[in-house]
Structures are given as structure tokens and as C-alpha cells.
Image (cartoon, rainbow, N blue to C red):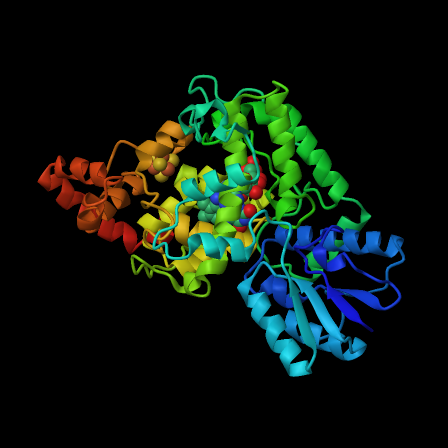
Length: 511
Ligand SMILES: Cc1cc2nc3c(=O)[nH]c(=O)nc-3n(C[C@H](O)[C@H](O)[C@H](O)COP(=O)(O)OP(=O)(O)OC[C@H]3O[C@@H](n4cnc5c(N)ncnc54)[C@H](O)[C@@H]3O)c2cc1C
Ligand code: SF4
């Protein structure tokens, strides 16, 4: 055999550069399901399902092309780890080289390197052209910069790919339309009718995967009843079409809004399809820009969305590969708290956390503001260990792959890398959550109180956090206002808040 071409579970595209010169007469595909990947972190059942089902659909399409392949199934009686299973495949086929597109995880790349070295087989890693900025290009851009900022990177990408540009200037004269994009749902009427995204009824392949998961991982968190994710390229393209036509027009305005029983809002739900490479970010960006040029969506909505895909998604990946492996150990605030058990059940009296966690368990999904300003915000204020929080985020979302999960969790939500790539910690009191949602009206806790038994834990922990980090926050122009407000607080009240915070921090499990 010339090349054994390993297609990882998050590389499901026939446009993959590893398949460019595929020759069925002397090459073969290799795909591996490994129980170790489902239990490396305690994965949500829907996360396991989306990977396995998408991989199985992909290999069926390869089979339809009469391509030779070796597909190792999760329940085969073989050692459980991915690494052991690759070694077995290498021995089985003795290829001249193992060819694979750069993995999304640092851990996987190290595994491939070590297993190929041990088996004496050449490993050929190929640049991942799914992304618009290669690892090398990003590291060149980041070189010599102590702090990396999305805004500058994003402008480079807009110019480079000529997206929403006119004569080398940003469309509409601004790079950023954030001010138009932060509305809450109307408090009196709520979100009203939200057009549904494309849902996909599980087919026989997906149902077979569900069956295997219930058999092999019955104790894993999360449910499968709501599983309706795209698992093929055709489905992903349909999901994109429905989003752009029916949901994108309201996406921008309500992207930061939260409301009970509104788990999906106007969001695209495209992250998993993108991360598995069922669709390409170029086609997503082009569809959105075309909708704007045709007058079907506002510039604020189109720009708000494009910044997430062309900006944040590429930036986050670049940061991951530039800062690994240190990123995984980062802990700017030296937070060591244990993750409360209710993160896995949603059983807490805090309405905002309960709603965000319960929908996460039902769908394997929460939108960005729930992840950042509810779950992540709480984790920062409660001084939880970034490593434990990171493992939870990696386990619990259908779109979670370490290159995108870790910088978002550790770097953005928990500020564990200090100001390396975000200029301030994303912390807020209950007032922010109250403004952006209807959660507080249904909560056991009182959003107006900072201390006392009924005080909103976000309030108590927020002021405790500001006081603890007053020196560094006051010297940063982006956070100085937070400390000015602290200085206005009555001293006795501050003492009460600090005392209550101590009690809350030692009783997180009972909140
Ligand atoms: C603590 C935390 C953990 C996160 N973990 C993940 C993760 O494991 N996987 C993941 O794909 N995203 C992650 N994100 C980013 C973001 O929350 C999700 O991409 C988004 O919620 C997915 O839903 P959507 O497809 O409906 O996104 P939309 O709101 O519709 O956004 C459109 C697309 O933009 C991209 N995008 C938006 N924000 C980001 C971002 N910050 N980083 C990278 N891409 C972005 C995604 O591809 C997304 O599909 C995380 C964010 C936080 C704060
Ligand atoms: S009162 Fe506090 S804990 Fe309750 S929903 Fe509002 S912000 Fe969340």
C-alpha cells in the first residue's frame, strides 16, 4: 500500500487535501471509532452520536465511490484508545506513509507522531485548507505580539478575502456593528414567533448509533431525544440555506438575547457542521454576504455573523495552535474550585444556570451568550478550576473540539490566559443577565440583592471578585468603571457581601 489516509472524525469532507491525489489502486482510507474518545472526557451522548453518525455516513459515501477503506467500529473487540487502534491498523496495512490532515487537537497530533514513530511508519501531515488562515500564517501574524486582538486579525481577514469590502474600505464605513446587535427580546412580549431551524429526523444509521451509545455509554450525560443535527453534507447545506433565508435577518439583533424555553434563539446551529467539515466556512460566508448584497438581510446582521466565522473562528484556532500546550494549564486567577455536581444535572435554584444547563443536556447546545455570560461568567466568579471547567465544556456540546473549545473556555470565558487575547475578563453581575433575559423573574434568588440568603449569587460573587482584583481591574481602562462602582458601595454592605461570598464559595454544591 502506498498511502493509508486517515480521515479523522472532524475532517469529513471529500474536498480534504489528503484526498486530492487518492488513488484507489494503491491507497486506502482509514477511519477509526474508539471508545476512548467518548470517555476521554465524559461526553454528552449527542456529542458521541453526531461524530459517529457523521463518520458512518461519510464512509458510506466513500464506499459508493468504490474507494477501499478500513473502518474500525466502536464496539469491535480491540483495545479502546485511538492510539492503540491506529497501531493495529498500521500493522494490518504496512503503508509507506500514514497521510492525515493536521488534526484539530494537539493531543491527537502528539498521538499520531508517537504511534508512527513507534511503528516505524512515515507520518505525512497536510495543511488543513478547510480554514482560511493556516497555522503558519497565523503564527506569522502573531509573531512578536504579546497580546493578540480579534479586531485587528479580523480586519486583515476581511481585506485578504475581500469580504464586505468596497474599494478596500469596510462596507458601510465601519468594521463592526455591535451596537446594533445587542438587543434583548421585548420584555413584555418575549421573543414571539421564532422560525425553526432545519431539523433532521434520525435515519437508520443514526438510530443504530443511538442504540450503541445507550448500550456502551448508558451513564453518560445528556439525552438523545432532541437529536436533529445535520450529519451529512447535503443536510448541512440545507441547514445553511434555511438559516440564511429565514433566521439570519433576526440573528444580529438578538444574538445576545436569552429567554426561558428558547434554547436556539435566532442562531445558526452551524458550528457542529462546520467543525466536522460537513460545510466549508467559505460557502457559509459567501451565502451570508450574498444575502446582504441581494438586500435580504441588514448589514448589521451579515457583518455580525461574518465576524463570528471569518473572525472569531479563525482567530480562536490560530490562538490554540500558537499557545498550546501552555493554554491547557493556564490559570491567571489561580482558581482551584471544584465544578459543582449540578453542572451535570442542571439541578440548581439559579434560574439562568438551570435553563442554560438543562437545554445543554437536552440539546448538546447553548448559544454563545449562555456559554459566555451565564455558564462561563459563573465559573469565573465562583473561582472554578479552568481545567475542570474546560473538561466540562469539551464534554457537553455537540460542536466541542479542543481547538475551538479550549481558547473559548479558558481564554475568553475564564480569562485564564490574562490579557493574552481578550482585553478584559467577561464578568458581570445579575444585572446583566436580568437585562438580557427573563430569567430573574422566575428565580429563587433576588436579582436586586447582593448579600443575604436570597441574594443573587452572581451579584455576591461579582462584587467579591471586583474587590479581590481591584488593583488590576482599576488599572485597565476597560474595567476601571467596575472598580469605581465598588468604591461607591457602602463599607458595611461590602463587608456583608464578602462574608456572604465566603459562605457561597464554600457551598457551591447547594446553590
Ligand atoms: C465557554 C465557551 C465555550 C465554547 N465552546 C465552543 C466549542 O466547543 N465549539 C464551537 O464551535 N464553539 C464554541 N464556542 C463558541 C460559540 O459559543 C459557538 O460557536 C456557538 O454558540 C455555536 O452556535 P451556533 O452555530 O448557533 O453559532 P452562531 O451564533 O450562529 O454563530 C455562527 C458561527 O460562528 C462561529 N463562532 C461564533 N462564535 C465563535 C467563537 N467564539 N469561537 C469560534 N467560533 C465561533 C461558529 O462556527 C458558529 O457556528 C464557545 C464559546 C464559549 C464562550
Ligand atoms: S437572580 Fe441571579 S441567579 Fe437568578 S436568574 Fe437572575 S442572575 Fe441568575
